[in-house]
Image 1 (cartoon, helix red, strand yellow):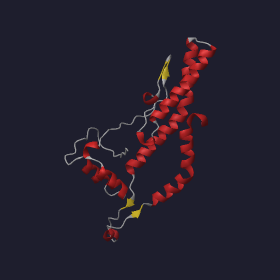
Image 2: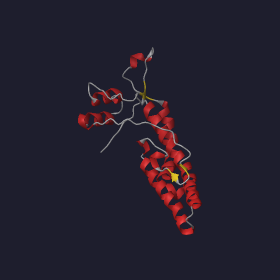
Image 3: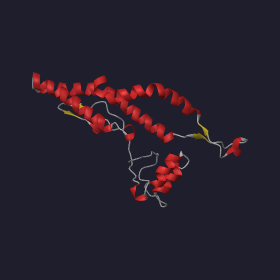
Image 4: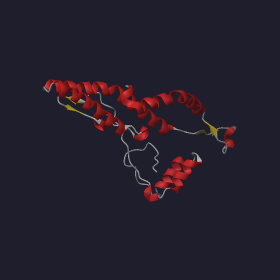
Length: 192
């Protein structure tokens, strides 16, 4: 089993004198019991820190007889699990376009045209998933499950947890839109 958490920090902030587990509990210890249990039950030496650097997607993937695929063209954060999937779809589309060249001709112009067609067909779908991945990352980094009351007269209710109202709005929105988006995301090439 693998679990991961996002927290925005400056690069190279990997020194945690009290340990990574303590750092995670400081960050996520007020979340639900399941999160606390995951952190508590994970051995310290099994907790890995992997810095993730985000980069904008580029919209020109190739020049001449050279093109890019996968992370070279459109790196994605791992929260939707689509980085490798997009690279596989890139390869599939590239094979389809180059196969047309092999069947109909083999001149330089035909190969270059095939590479540009591959890019033109892939960029719109990848753009949507790249944007969704970035949005999911921003939502995860800024997620706060409860409203904290630190002002009078409610400051006496420190132990009272009230779910953030945005959770209800998001839940209602996701209930109707997310299944369609996931179907499109997973079905990939066939629906595009």
